[in-house]
Image (cartoon, rainbow over all chains, first blue to last red; front, side):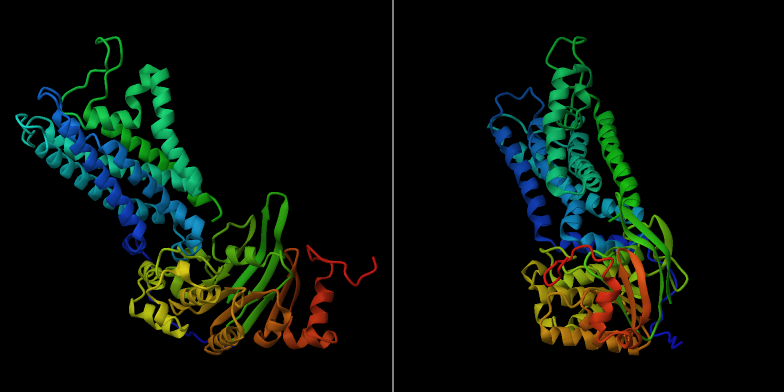
Length: 266
Length: 243
């Protein structure tokens, strides 16, 4: 047999670092990444400014008002999270990706780390710019909130994480569903529509719905009233509990997505 | 050597690959021939670990695909023409793959030059013609300078000049001592490209032979191929036949 060793393969094995580098190149070389994140951040800031300008009195939670754009803005992070996974399937890139990295759990972990970091950075930019811009554009005579006041820094920082956590929820859904329109439909329909319906019908679980966690738990400096007399309706979750719930949703979607990714044919 | 042993894969109730066994040896071009729908692409996907076999296994130099330390440095594959994101440039696509297997980035421009895409390197792959996308897929296969090359229908979409180019490329890769495994449903293309032939039909092995041996059996290689696969073609017109 003419068995000539033509190329020498170096020893060792691809590592997380290599896979993360691939995912970073894939993410940053698509213009849609920057457009989607840019629109999400700009939208969040614009809404925060609009709400700030409309403020009538200084007694409300002005930090929460300035962060009002985070809920609509995080939708784009969620959609981008879905696309990080589903665009691989729609374009066929997944086969090139998995031929390069057959270790599927490692691949998903790298996507989570790279996309999660980008979405977190975008979310924190959106939250801090919203906070300062919303404060700066308050009507004359209403003092802007400061980061040193109780609960303010926490509200701004945790709001920023919502882009990352909803983005990762989208990434997990993308891994489960694999088709862009269906996965985006489930994400948007699930967190914006279905969760609101469930919340309206079953008051007991209302506080656990992702949008209400972002709007009424993690972005507040003081407890929000549920609208009715105390004791008659469930109060929003405390901020840190709300953050834990969002982490749990993202983790559950990613675990299911990872389990399926490792077992299904590509 | 690539050893395919008892490979079996069904999708629902259809058995796409049925107890398939063969070897791919270095230094020669091995043609993988069969009618449309005979299980060639499924076999390729199973070889790369993209799909999991129901039974059987593929070993590349003694290891399964997922056991390879640097897969792209050991196996290069062209699976389908457009396995790339339309919004990403050719160079970015290759750079991402290079990063995953710690392949130096200068290799990206090397392979782009090798396939004649230097001038299109920065253009988005969505704007590529079928032939250009095929060349980019071949560049990706060559990226890690691998000892094993798998090409699934590589001449699809190429013009005559491109077909000649890929044929010469495959022969020169084999002459360097690499394993070259190329699927096609075009018997005449295989006749001028391959040395050895693996012929399958309906997922089963029909012949493991050489081009010379197979042509010797009939008036032409085409006749020999059609005779061999007559019982297994999934779709066949009846024009020119009485029954």
